[in-house]
Amino acid sequence: MSSKRKIEIFSAGCFVCETFVAQVREEACPSFEISVLDMKSPEVAVRAKQLGVGSLPSVAIDGVLARCCTSGGLDMAVLKEAGLGRPVQ
Image (cartoon, rainbow, N blue to C red; front, side):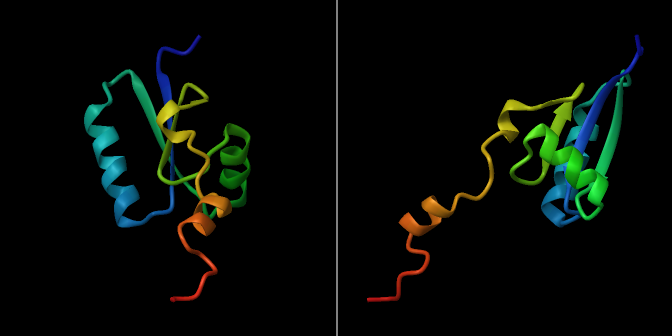
């Protein structure tokens, strides 16, 4: 068994993601190994899909997507309810 826990941060590399990465690094203790994964990489995108990542940034700890990151991301039905596709009246 590894003596370190694993944090995977799925990131688009934007300001919001980078700020989040910094916050996670600040909060993590030395027993964590942190990997920042670039969603532009096809391999990373496959891993993200396996975990159920639906929005960025997202975090998995020891291979489990954090509950706060499981919202599923964009939902076309919700966007349409908000007015997507309807002209100004």
